[in-house]
Amino acid sequence: MNIDRPGLKFRAKQLMSVSKPAPIPVGLIYIAFTMIVSMLSSRLLTSNINADYIMDVANRMMSGADPGVYNEYMEYISTHGPSAGASALNILLQLVSSILWAGFILFCINTVFGRHAEVANLLDGFSIFWKVLILSLLESVIVFIGMLLFIIPGIIMIYRYRMAIYILMDDPEKSPVQCMRESAVLTKGFKWQLFVLDFSFIGWYIVIALPFIGYFAEVYAFPYMNLTRTLYYRELLRFAGKDVGDGQTYVLPENY
Image 1: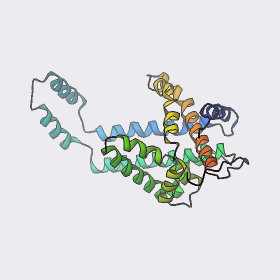
Image 2 (image 1 turned 90 degrees about the horizontal axis):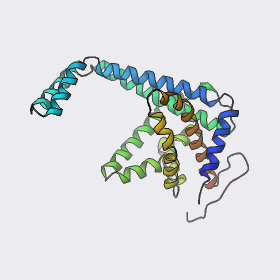
Image 3 (image 1 turned 30 degrees about the vertical axis):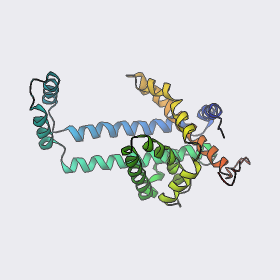
Image 4 (image 1 turned 135 degrees about the horizontal axis):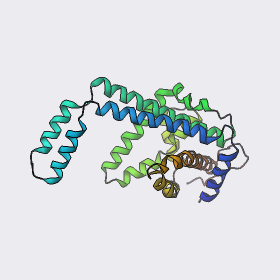
């Protein structure tokens, strides 16, 4: 069974132009916050490190003239690394960023399903903070174990549980484990198509990586790509025989 990928992308572009509130400003708020978090994290983790010394060590490593430079570097990092307070604050910032990411997914879900989407959706993840955190940890552990098994199993696990966060934000009453189980069912037979969907955005990722212009490209590409993925989530629900509110459902064979 195939899902109309070009059709979903076209629909996502339509939603970009007609949805209220517009996805681009909401996405921009999230992007701006993550940029601030990235700068603060960099500052917190490197505040005690002398940049000139690091450059000198890098040059010595490249020249190969000083065989003991690596041990010297490791000793320097161990004594000049971030303080416990800075590390704790950095972890807190990353957690807040994760919660806002979950909130943006909820905004996309509400937009795609014709529900009441609003900027405040970005903060709705805080009401289920622990569920989002536990789900993220469970996925990370499973994917890490998969990556240890020659990478491919890890990639499979990424796509197996790709829809877990969507399921959780769509129905916060469900447990993280239940969301992962349902994601495994939804993505059965569609993991390769999900991979192809992600790969189809490769052009956008290249442009986003460009200096300066990448920031402007991301403002459009970020909500566009995530609306497309949310539309894909809706299609997976249809194929699972669930009513998504537009009267169109598909029923999979019993042995699927």
